[in-house]
Length: 285
Image 1 (cartoon, rainbow, N blue to C red):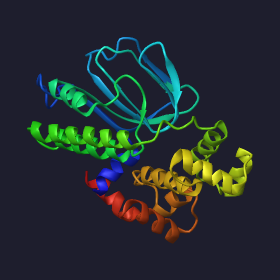
Image 2 (tube, one colour):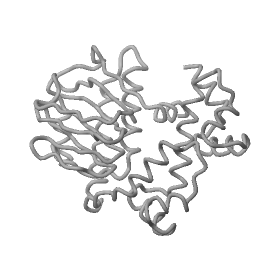
Image 3 (tube, rainbow, N blue to C red):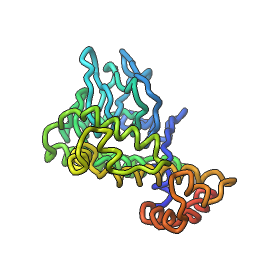
Image 4 (tube, rainbow, N blue to C red):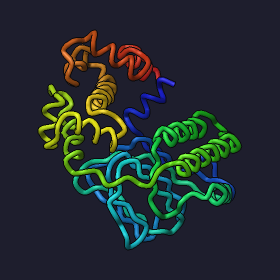
């Protein structure tokens, strides 16, 4: 489980030159979890080259579309493109993260129809962990065995789509677009995480009071500004820990902590293991 958290933290993508499962009923061609993208726009007028389904969840504000109508969408937007449908997504101004799967087959078509999920139009998925956990489990089955079990993969995908359908059916309407001032605050936290950042500083940046900033930030990003800062620092720390030449104290300093004990305490609370243990675990893989 700790290694799954490590994969989520660093982000990854895996395209299969030869899909481990490739039948008319089910084919999985690629999976990405928390893949980091630079500021860019992806524009495929005719969909993917192999004409398959593309499931994609965006963690940041992006422009998304499936034809001529490409509109800005808030964080936690999901899109399911059908084969051959135009795919347009991205952000020209800021980097963004996304989780995705390329797949095809009669099973996919049947599950989508049965669960009545929106196709070729954006919708909100308020719990990104649903995509992450299921796709990591699918990836582990496809890569962890000489002969992946197609039934297990099918069940994982079915559970994924059933959970998405349950969330979509109970979720409120799509939220209003995130105010630019809040996006500016979040971008500042993501890029300047190693500095001393206070709520007062962030509130001044957004021209809001501290209580109003906290309220609006949580409304749009589902967490507080300080919790978001800590999460960003922990994710960066886990990335830096891959460099064996860096001492753990140096990693702590690079993400804004001079107190090694306090840093280790926060890291263990976030990942469930100490920085040293996670470094050793990653080295064994």
